[in-house]
Length: 565
Image (cartoon, rainbow, N blue to C red):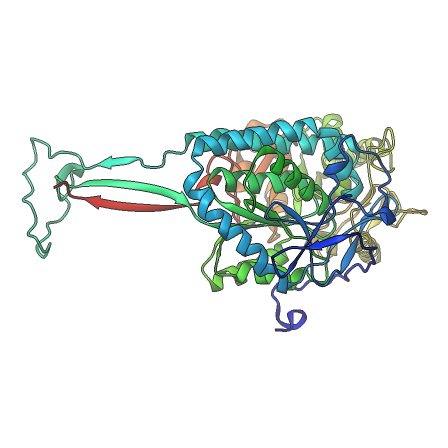
């Protein structure tokens, strides 16, 4: 099948091309794999940094506990968004390589799901968590050079990801493999239910007061791991999302295949290295890398494989819909965490100074490349001018630079494609009457994919920034007059993952909570529900299991009725 023509995963991006020098290899007994020994990094691409633990920088796929490349020996380039330079390469896997990876995961599942008790899985996850925290700075350094985000943001991502592993380690211990559900005995106040005939042909209806139709019978529920899980991980938070998906699946007793974004595979490979050290059996966590050009075919082959029982996807709404179509063909269990074009509403009674500070911190985190980042800022007409001035003053304090540079608070965009899209959106807005209040809306001179924080005023509904996911360091300001008006505008999008409202009026705050069509809301705060114990919502932007229920996504439930002899 020609994936470029028929794959539901086809995007509009151009694949990165690269060459890689070869190091010594030895053939394994597996026909399609080439096992690579040390060093983990080719001498031709020395990283622009030094790690305390150099073994964490792995550049080959991780399959069945081995570091492997596939027979085509093709590799693709990993770029530093802060310089635009190649600093590593990874195997450019194809759909022909998928079977070997799934074979490994299936083999591991047969033993891991049956012979590794929940308490042992909890111990392995706890060990993994400790190793992640011990390698905190090394992992953050890799993240900075993959994503471009500032070091302090990368460190926060490592900490958050580790907290998820710790949470799921505890969840694994709480798994009850065989919760019994005995049928209640008939109440003295109800008529006894006669035993059914042997062929159940005259089975009575359920008796009164909730007692069983068949009192002597007992019921039981058994929860078991679903099987192989596929995690499709984006480049925005490659480490945290790899951990969120992997830790939940492994806590449930599943094996998992991680297909990281082509831009950010090295953080997932480093986590796989630490999982090996933690003692996870070979094949429990496999990581398959591929270029952007081969991603559609590889992702489709993984999603369509009958041995893959569940798929967890985080990414754009456009691609998420195509993933859903593919998984629906096989009625595969699917978890989606999709994008958003989030509104930020400032009423005239808000604390404007605090609101401006919060907006800058939220909007320009990871250069605006966050699914819950606001793109449409609606400001009440009475405070529009004063709030705009405060916002620009706060945005001017951001320091643009490489993520590893001291004092950097705003890094580059992760991809050149994102930079081009941001420039096109700014041009579209200006052409349709918007005004440039701050910034240039264009790429900064020099190396890397930098764009200064940009604020546009006099925004209108027909502009691209209002209709599409932005994922860039650009913000549009809109004027509103009434609560009904701004609620209607805020809800006028198919991709509203989060919403933010700032007002001192408690009645209005509650009304907006009820009326805004968003999965999660920030009410006088931009700190959303990232605490692992707090459930997140879902509202038309895909369904993501919350941490408190995520294990159920990777478990099947069997019910049995038993008649004691």
